Length: 156
Image 1: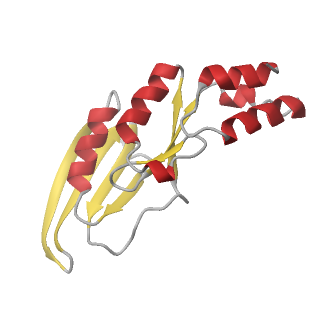
Image 2: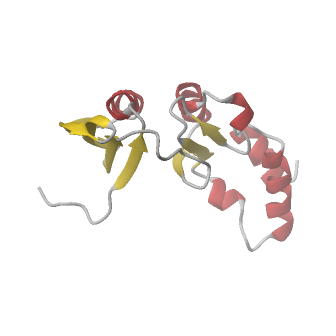
């Protein structure tokens, strides 16, 4: 198997394996590839987990509380339907005070953007009025509502 050019790497205190198991249960076509345990590191036993989420390579490490996740890094989930948005939101949003404009934070502190696949089309840069209407609509939302965004795009 060819090594991917870019792999996302996530640093956890002690939850790398639990997080990877959770994420592969949420996303279709996902799996854990390998788990390696390194004993007696400065932060204790260290799990290194290789996994794929919907075909995208990830690694996770349990290496102590040196780093914390923040909103500077997030993962975008493009959703074709409201049902998809609702599904991912229900699985991943665990910090209600972090919810805004399609962003949510999961129980491990990782930030996700759950957005309609049609968002780029709705934010058509050739129509500043349309873009302004859609922006005004989504700034009021926590979880995106595709029907409301489409109404705004259409000027209703």
